[in-house]
Image (cartoon, rainbow, N blue to C red; front, side):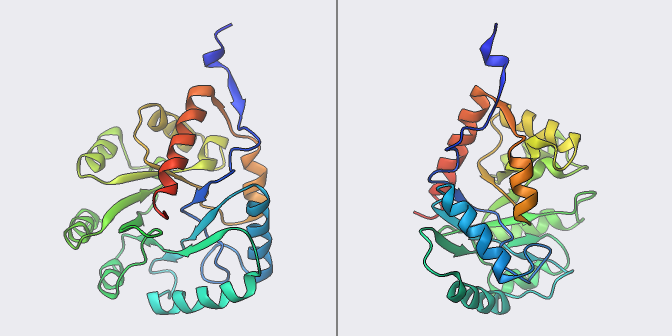
Length: 241
């Protein structure tokens, strides 16, 4: 039997020491967790799994009236209600490349951990016509671009991914993509991008604890792919060190 082609469940200790750089745990600000109680339950879950730090990345997009000031205030209030948990919290944002992006950048975007990296996304169906210029301008201003969950973009081709990488942009994998949580297309793209070494980071993109814990158990990968996930996790840790 060729064991290299056998898929395995993720190791029980896969999340020990993990730094999650993409989450929607900050309560009541987007389509993620609706209450402090549910958010704290998620933090306890991850703490029990050995997660060392979580970057809270609420959506900044036209659909939500979030600003750097309002989100920072909400974050400080949330921290006061978390209690004594053995994991670190950081605040950043997930920025949609829409008509509001330039204003968010002018106000000062919330970057990942202690880095200058900013987490960006596009619409799943099509890319904003000015997205390329927005990213170019942000890079000129000293920000380092991280494209969130590229495997989920229906419009994106291999050429798009290669172009982003040629510009120096980093790609962030959604862990649940392998489980089929976002459909077969995202699962297949995620496997291909992982095998090709295109990813730089990995995040949960958690929106609810029930959904995450359900699909997380269904992830099965080859041994070499699991090793690559572990390398991405090591890259995550560098953002908060």
